[in-house]
Picture (cartoon, rainbow, N blue to C red):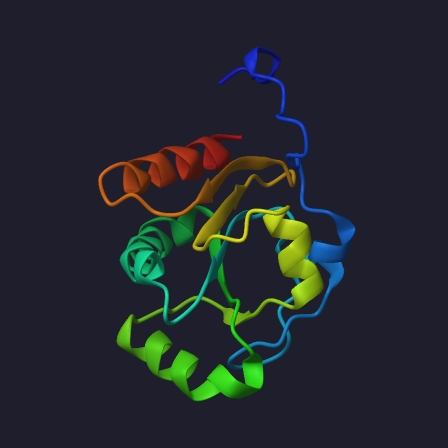
Length: 161
């Protein structure tokens, strides 16, 4: 899509991830902290989710599939649980194993969650981010009929950019 033909951003919508979101070190399930700025130059899907969230349980298998399908083309997926890291560590670990989430998983901090959600606290929320840092599309919630194709379209648009 020609950037000049894009509709103007809605008031309060982000065009890029703010520095707070990019530069905060987020606790990872395994390995070093997750820092979204480390994914610069890659197409990135950031997914906010929780183990208890029904729509998240429907969306995550789609993200796992897209990660496998597109990672050789430069797609990275990062899953960030909105749960308390100490209280949910075992549950998140079991969830990640059960859903075969082979991408980085960690926990979003309250300030990063607030910055990303912009007053819309429903989950799941997913952000498809182009290599240049532009947010291609933000998804709030999950619709089993529409969202998978919309996610695929947004990922493919980001990969072309």
